[in-house]
Image (cartoon, one colour):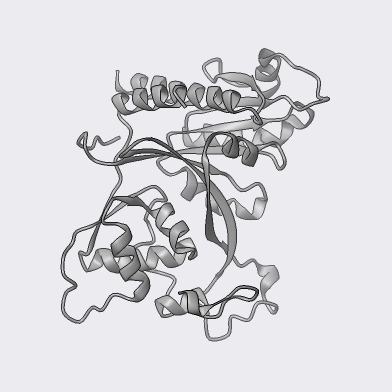
Length: 191
Length: 115
């Protein structure tokens, strides 16, 4: 990591990952200002013969919409929250999103725990600090955080916590837990 | 851009027309949270910033992230990166990416707690 002078504006990136419908957007909305972003999707083979790219062979993308969250800590210090796209065809965006990220929150739903396996594998492989936040849906069995840790085969140093992403105070605890974890990882890498 | 917009149909000018059909530029590698700042320099001879680039130059008189520039312009990220790449090539903007130090992370933790 490089260190800028103290008056240089700093923008930090946090990823919110997890399976479809687990509450990523709800979490971002509970704690930050939501901003729209248009981005591109690589045209898949399925588009051949349907999407007319004659004469514009260089164009291999089409536009998709996504949101991001912005939390201003103070002037010159802003935290951005990016939800990772759920569908497999958007995997290409993960590398761009995770580049230089401070860390990631993997949201889990105990009724569909396997949905968060791909996210955990991805961040483990990339060495991106991450925590697992178990979103406690109404009607879902309340599992202890430790049960989830065992079920997901997580390292002992990966924080696991229960949360309700609809509640601002809970969303705040999730983010604080992640940044504290990232700070520990950063400190350990420097010692 | 307003006069080129049709509320129902979306933009009449396809975004890639704004950048001459290019999808590759020196802006490709720009990170979403890289900070863009105007150098307040004069455009070099032979380079005329497009209306969108003029808007960017006004926007980034205070440092602004790539994601915020794209969001404010309501243009696709890839198009914005090409526009930014051109401005950077002509030294009209500087692009920085400060990483988090221990001090900054502690400040973020305290800031989040105080929300």
